[in-house]
Image 1 (spheres, rainbow, N blue to C red):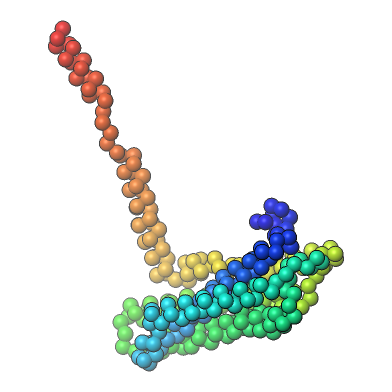
Image 2 (cartoon, rainbow, N blue to C red):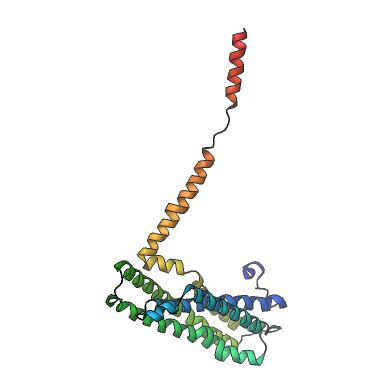
Length: 266
């Protein structure tokens, strides 16, 4: 939005925004990526044939682990984001050599690159293996269908996550090691174009959950229809009709009564 309005994103002019933009972006990215991993791990444990493993993943434990990781993401993003500085020729870039090496060899390729991809892929395959053998367990048919459908949703989400994340991580590793100066207009414009394409693909990760579940889960479609049509629509309809059907006092009654009294007097 800033680029569309003012021609740039203000990271090259504002020292505070240069750091804050990357801090907020990394917090959201880390949290979203690893919540997908936690979902897959939870699905693996909940479909496991061993009772003690199924009882291990509780709602309390999920909240505890999620809270710890969010705190880690905030602290990590603040430490890494404060190392961004404005340089006259390159704009807002990493200026500390240690953090450049850390981002090149650990943060982008491992922490938000291949590590979540490996975790999500491995546990989704294990969860799929559990679901294939779920027939042997003495469970109600409804519960079996529900486990299979949730596992299918998680598997689809993981595959989309891998396809959307890999191009952006590869580009970021390249961009950090080989920044392009604005003094080279053609190369800089090509780099910006590639960045916009890969960033747009990566951002789809944050908005695609609803559409994936609507497409691949019949149960989710029924629940969405129930909530949107039968609950939200009915409430909105009732609210609009109640406004239109309000009973208001009729002032014409008093006028007609006064006319009748005057006619009787005459």
